[in-house]
Structures are given as C-alpha cells and as structure tokens.
Amino acid sequence: MDPRIQRQAEELGRLLAESEEYQALEKARATLGEHSAAQIMLKDLQQKQENLRKKQMNGEEITEKEVQNFQRSSQVVAMNPYVREMLEAEMVFSQMLTQLQQILFQR
Image (cartoon, rainbow, N blue to C red; front, side, top):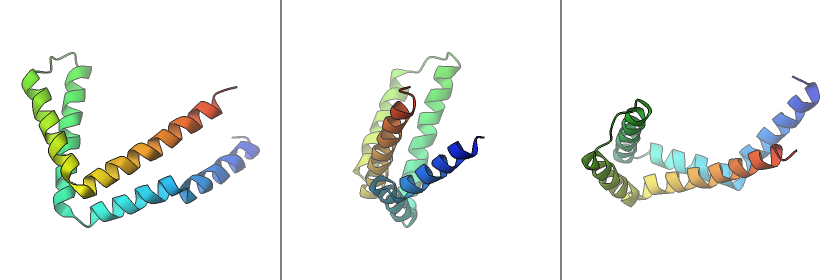
C-alpha cells in the first residue's frame, strides 16, 4: 500500500475511534456486556435474522409465521433499554461510515 494512503487511513481510524458516534457505540456495547439477559436476547434475535437470511440466500421460502416470529422478537428485544441503546448507537455509527464511503468514492 502507498505509505501516504497508509498514513491517512491510520489517521482516519484514529479520528473515527475518537468520534462521539464510536464512543457512544463502545459505551453501549460495554453496558450491554454487563447485562447477560440482554445479551442473550440480542444473540437470539441475531440468530433468527441470520437463519432468515440464509433461507433467502438459498432460495427457500420464508413463511409468514417466520416473519411474524422475527418481528415479535424484534419488538420484544427493542423494549430492552440496553439492547435498544446499542442498536441505535450501531445505526448512527453505520450511517457515519456510509457517509464516509460516499465521500471516498465521489472521485
């Protein structure tokens, strides 16, 4: 890699790590880490989401019951303040990264 690009990437990484968005995400992850029930809820939801994604990628039909089950689980998990805080922080940070990608590839 071009050393100039390497230096700029390292600087960008440092700036991202110092950003409010990343700090909020790290704080939310740490808080979630202190609550095992919330971790289990989130892990279960992520597993259901992954299973649905795999079915879709394999061309399998996703039933209405599976969709409803996932939606119910999402609603329940979203009520947990620790999970909700982490998911919201992830979304904000992800939006920032998306904006960054758009800037990088404008040229």
